[in-house]
Length: 82
Image (cartoon, rainbow, N blue to C red; front, top):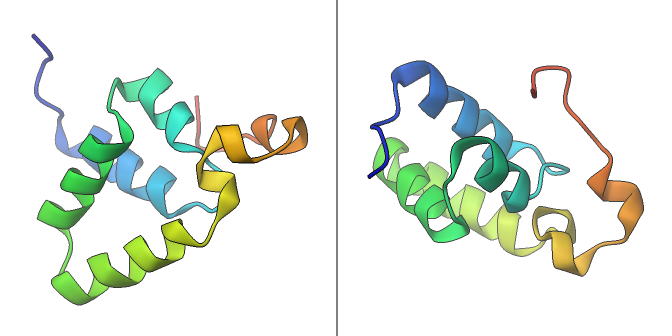
């Protein structure tokens, strides 16, 4: 069973989810959350209008889904990312 996420981890997941070039696979590798779990976390922590804006943004970005992009995007790493 997974340990509950602390506030710092939740903040980092939200930051990574907002980053255009950080795929959901990177979040899964670092925190063990699948795409649907990240979406549920975002929905539960954001205002409804902010969540809708984020969801629409994610749906139009190929870079959030590793299988849709080339290798050049998979090498990007934020300075805050481990």
